[in-house]
Length: 83
Image 1 (cartoon, rainbow, N blue to C red):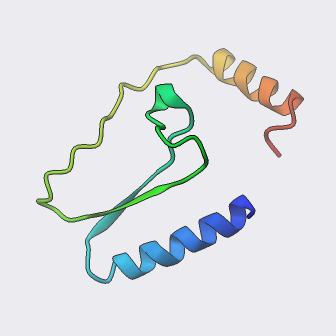
Image 2 (image 1 turned 90 degrees about the vertical axis):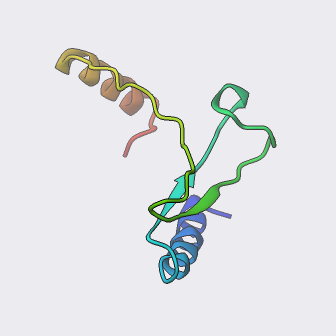
């Protein structure tokens, strides 16, 4: 199954959930250090409401210089990861 097909299915599910919930979180954990416990690709679609008390861990964003950003961008381009 292609990533595009997976995203299309996810969006259909979210559209249905939004009829009865005020929001959704879409999560993909890749690798054990990212919290992945089942070692195959899967996504979590979590229906959300204002007072649901679900805590999704957040992190502090790292500030980077324009040069650091361009270095990462060029590295990804060389490895054909970006289009």
